[in-house]
Amino acid sequence: RQEQYARLRDVAAVTKDGVEIALHMNAGLAIDVPHLHDTGAASIGLFRTELQFMLAPRFPRMDEQYRFYRGVFDAVPNRPVTFRTLDIGSDKILPYMAKIDEENPALGWRAIRIGLDRPGLLRMQLRAMLKAGAGRELRIMFPMIANVSEFEAAKAIALRELEHLRRHNYEEPKTLKLGAMVEVPSLLWELDLIAQRADFLSVGSNDLVQYMYAADRDNTRVSKRYDNLSPPVLRALKRIAAAGRRAETPVTLCGEMGGRPLEALGLLAVGYRSLSMSPAAIGPVKSMILGLDLAEMQDFVAQLLDANDGAPSIREKLRDFALTRG
Ligand code: PEP
Ligand code: MG
Image (cartoon, rainbow, N blue to C red):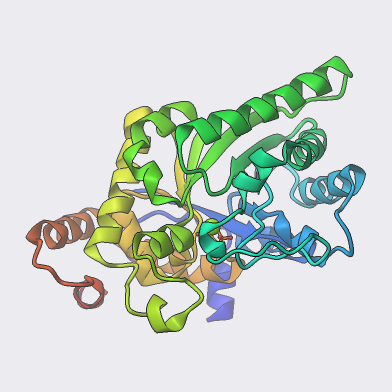
């Protein structure tokens, strides 16, 4: 199997009916980055920057952050990198930061909320990313965006940092794209606007599903009750992909479901053409794509969603249909 996947490295992920799917890689540590080469991933589609912060003995200084990000770019010449700004809080704790007492950490002070309330930290990180992106294709995305105004506020901070770099004659990124993660359900009712304002969207399905079902993703007592392949989740995901197409804004999904072949199949069927996943998932997902007749699968899933029969999941039906088609 491993060898079979290795042979797929340079094979484009194209369905049997000719639809090309972009497969990107998630990373968070320096040692993850070289996997881009052995998997043949198109880019780093999600770099979780909080891991560097979680492993450090104290808050990394700007120059330490810069060197780390530059090292990521240097390890993947000619490829874009999508850095996510710090996503701490909830389950991701920095040992050197004062612990905050919260009844519901997952609903609490985390990610971009901290970034906007303590803009000094966000500014420092953005400066490090912008400097590290000199001459490169830099993509930055903001986690846990709940409405368009939070995205605008984060974007304004990034553009101010870019201006600062220009004033001081630093080399700028060759291209800079600023994106929003779609992982807080409130954004589902501002989709057209966020798709117009952001350069790209990235769906954080791990959190989106947790918040849609009000079920802690790390608590298997409740998280296993709900399926990523449920009609409500698939309908929501379909709307996000459609809003991206209407605004001509690229949409990627970077949650774990994109790396599970059957769930990835469901995602393609509701309109996704770009997925970012852990390196080990790229071979299996690519292999699924190469055997897929997407048009037929799209019709099948659309029928299941239209049937509106109250089934909690389409997983079994999707699996059976996929198996009969090879
Ligand atoms: C997600 O929520 O789906 C996601 C990609 O981010 P994380 O798992 O780091 O919260
Ligand atoms: Mg998330």
